[in-house]
Amino acid sequence: MLLARFIDTLFDLMSMLILLRVIISWVRPSVRDPRFVKMIKLLYDFTEPILSPIRRYMPKGMMIDFSPWIVLILMNILRNLIFNIIY
Image (cartoon, rainbow, N blue to C red; front, side):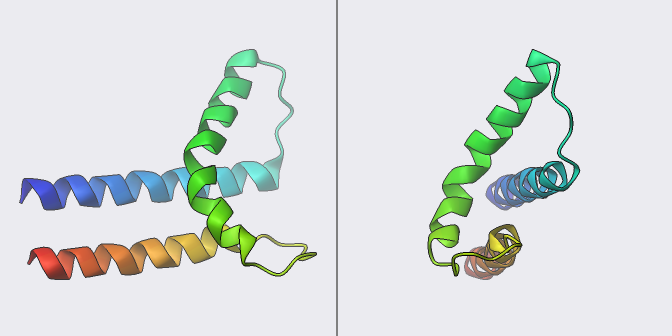
């Protein structure tokens, strides 16, 4: 039960980080505070290793980056598979 809770929390955290990255990319905040720059860099450092493999297979020249949404769908499928194996 503890393992399932840990896995669920990990997937939730990663989903929130990806959604936060999407929102930041839409808003494009004016960055004057160096702490804010560090937080955005940390957010990109956490999410880029997950998003970049999907982005490699996406068609080039698209105006909208759909890789976060594809990753969220794949993470949800993976979470369900893991929980089906555990239970």
